[in-house]
Image (cartoon, rainbow, N blue to C red; front, side, top):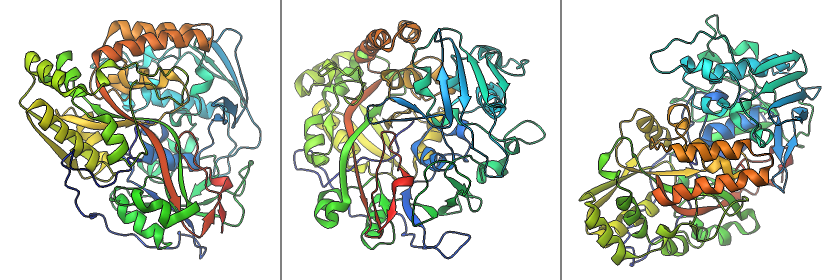
Amino acid sequence: MRVTKGAQIVAGTALLALAVAACGGGASETGGTAAGGGETPVRMELGEPQNLLVPSNTTESEGSETLAALFEPLVNYDENKNAVEAAAESITSDDQKVWTIKLKPGYTWHNGEPLIAQNYVDAWNYAANQENAQGAGYFFSRVDGFADLNPGEGKEVTAEGMKGLEALDDSTLQVTLTAPFSQFKVMLGYTAFYPLPKAAFGPDGKVTQEYGEKPIGQGLFKMDKPYRKGTDQTIDMSVYDKYPAKKPTGWTKLQFKLYTNSDTAFNDLQADNLDIHDSLGPASIATAKSTLGERYQDQPDAGVGYVGVPLKYNPELNKVDVRRAISMAIDRKTIAETVFSGTRSPADDFINPAIAGYRQGACKSCTYDPAAAKKLYEEAGGPKTLEIGYNADGPHKEWIEAIANNLKANLGIEATAKPFEKFASILDALDAKEYKGLFRMGWAIDYPSAENYLSPIFSTGAAATGSNYGGYSNKEFDDLIAKGDQAETIEEGLKFYQQADDILLEELPYIPVYFYRNNSGYSTKVKNVKINLLNQVEWADVEKA
């Protein structure tokens, strides 16, 4: 899942020559009541989702946070990062190739229809079909028959679905993969694997716009009214009374308030016009602890912040020595300790330390060495100007400007930071292959596996139907991922994933900059706010204060 939030920054230092602008941009949204009743909702800050609210076309955190409130995944994750059945009663396999998923009884769609195995078959086939151009389609590439739904550009899909998907009965789903994959169960908590009801599809077999604006889920909350993207400033929900698992006590209304500026949201939080803010911004992080006291939270996070490289679309950046020089010119330690006020740590691997597979110091080109960087950059014939795009609706301006200043000072080039108004805007520009500058990117895990830092972002297949925005492609990397997938145990698979990671560390298709921490706060009106490994609020635990 693409990280959109969470980069908490304070005013910069003279060393980095930062000029920090006063907080601005984004109006304060102070509406207090969700549609459908007089109860004051629990209100959470959110950026605008990139797309309509369809699970298989949601690969960024704003949309994922929204959908996680509406849907119950097949699995959740415990404190040890193990997959634990949620909507699934059991998930079993004798050979790690043929998987049987039994659904837990009691789950119904928000329109009252029972949840059945065919709902998963329909949703996953829709996601995998290239004609539907779903952003998360790549996640089904291991299912037998995926290739039939993806014959390639200019070729017509003739298959009705993936032959590896079958509803054996209303409560049993059988999934046959093309090869054994020990971590298939771990994947199933991701947004892409949510089911869809019959009501989602129009007569042409496509998910309708009406559904995307007001999705019917089978989770804790249901939509109170449609969400009109680009127009509405809130997404309003209420507790689904037939939800069979734990519900919150003392409140039933939830409202996501959409902001274009993180600091504006923090002002609303302090005024109790907002209840939860999980991505505190540049001007707030330094004072949040003293301002909020026990209502400020600083906790581990499994995300990674990068500078992305459009390898396929900008030949000036194709030389690996150019990318290595850029990486060595970045003062990660100062950015982490000073710009981020100690709430980040310098990245030295593509895998976050919170997940098995991380190796301290693995990225040799992540060591700050300005003199060597300049020499290498000049020898490689690096471009005289560089631009780094970032989304201005998240708190990223200061650290991207810090990097631009590093590149100016250490490489002797002209480097500038280019703001995009919204995260959706830069994602759309990257999807359309229109933006050729370096770009701010981050990754918040979809599921707790080293593989999730590698395959969805850097594999060849993910360039077409995943999150490989740079267009990176390396057959040896792809083959190692496949070997990791087919290993008999998770531990054996990890060895191959680390070898694939070694290739990334050598070639730097992205440049790792920092490892995230989650810095959040909540108002005086709520308590017991918990944020899980996927950076999503555990809504059933939240209480009114």
